[in-house]
Length: 401
Ligand SMILES: Cc1cc2nc3c(=O)[nH]c(=O)nc-3n(C[C@H](O)[C@H](O)[C@H](O)COP(=O)(O)OP(=O)(O)OC[C@H]3O[C@@H](n4cnc5c(N)ncnc54)[C@H](O)[C@@H]3O)c2cc1C
Picture (tube, rainbow, N blue to C red):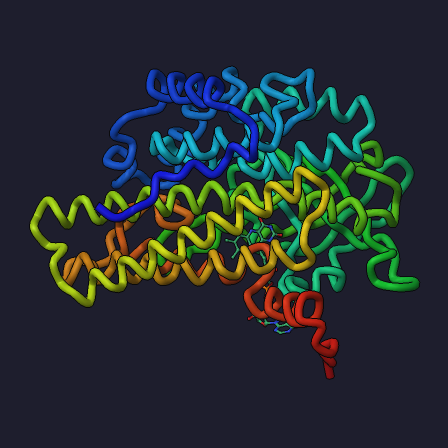
């Protein structure tokens, strides 16, 4: 069997006892046979399952190791967080897709910028399962986010919000939204942006799911018409939203890709074992390609281990996160192509699937189509390449016409 069993998360610390503890908890509690159960589920079925799994996991503290000490599970070192992700991947436990934005983007931003009353209101609610979405992108403001135009006018103790957001992941299921709005058009475009916490049940908020090529409806357009947001729901000062948004954008510090890289490694093993069990792993060309993918995964894990160690020591390399993100997106594409080829003709068939978000479904056509997400989400490949060329390779700055 190909595959490496290196454990990348220890970052020099001896965490075997903690690893054993996490492993034992997952052995006792992680749902079994969930892939089969989810194979025919629709969006609502998927969401119910995610809520159930989150409710089981949250009290253990393994969903919130990155939170401040004092909160359930909080105050874990980065190395311990890495161990949790590695063990979740090893146990093939479901990813926290529905609550991810709540646990990272919302919780980290509110912890950093929120007043005490905002923290007391929202952080316990997140542990109890409230779902957040992110309302940053707009039809004409994605890579160039600072061009956003959704307008918020202050009227007494409220903001009146009008505009449209797009690509809000899980927006149709969300209770709250991290919303970027324009409160001023004077001066540089970043200076007129304000950050609001918007109740998704407010009058005038209409999420409209977007059906993807896979048949899933993971994203939403969110229409906002005369939505009233209390001024007390602002995060940071008026006009300070761009700075607050940087906390949101860097809230998960590479941990997502670390988890996904571990899961990709496991998924490659599962694929190779399945082929071996049918005596279908003998084709020389296929074997070469599989080894190529394994080498890429190992290189990615090495890059991540280095990134995490430097991040812990406060000495991150310029452009490293862009290189990792880009490399991951390319590797995932190659991996899902390999899976598609392994499946042969039946792999060309696309059956309806639940929201998989990567290589998790085992339906290779869906996984291959979903792999394109990673060339866009969190900054497109083109933008990452620009960052690498300018900041790492010190090439001349891009001139936009
Ligand atoms: C899986 C996924 C989840 C997402 N979730 C959310 C969410 O929850 N909330 C949210 O607000 N947004 C979300 N997004 C949106 C995401 O942030 C944007 O799609 C992304 O920022 C790109 O913006 P855009 O789609 O408007 O493309 P554009 O910025 O319009 O880009 C279009 C094309 O032009 C290229 N391009 C643009 N500018 C340049 C440049 N300067 N140089 C070279 N090429 C350039 C891009 O690379 C791309 O190929 C999500 C996207 C994905 C794929």
